[in-house]
Length: 261
Picture 1 (spheres, rainbow, N blue to C red):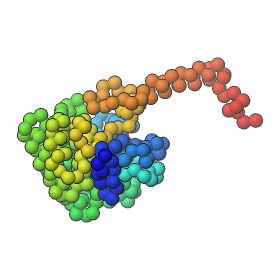
Picture 2: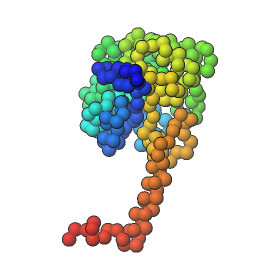
Picture 3: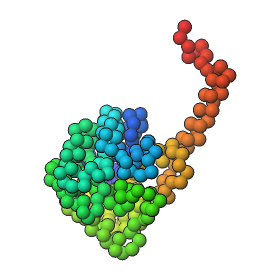
Picture 4: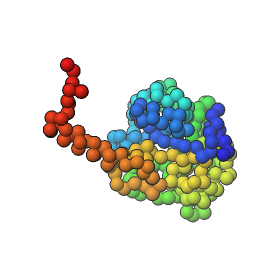
């Protein structure tokens, strides 16, 4: 299988990436997955937010720091939250805060044409950046309004141009979210840095999912088409809780085995 590099690490293609927001999940993933992302998806996953716009620097710093302590082998990626990189000055200041506090290998920012100048500035300052293009969730207050991109030729060419500009300016990888398969294929074939997809087909150089979606931890029944459940933790955990409740009610727990004498 072909190898692909991000920074100084070489991975078998396709690259695997999952999110982690806690030490316990980070420890499970470390070394078994190529990239671990502390994503601003923690806003909805952990805090019950309707979008990612309420995620703060303190949230990212706190979760990034605890994940960092457990990750020794996988590459660590951290999202910069909404409104923290609107201009070059703020972007660099906030990037330095996250880098110093959380020690990620790469920062990820959502890119449009206007944000290319920010990407360039961060790269010029020797910061490793992943460019997130396609559907950029921080742009949406209502996730129900998100639509797949790349269905028109104009969208396809604009996304390709954005990916090429990201590479030219020094991005280490491009994350493609919710774009058509042929658009993902076109981009992947026309840039030399890795593409990592979420809802962007098998044509990408790698894939990322939210860990909670992977194991069906979330109680949200309405999940995007690209989400695959590999394990129904929600159902199993519910049965375990019922069993615990029953044992407490019947005074079966705690028995002598779990009691100090």
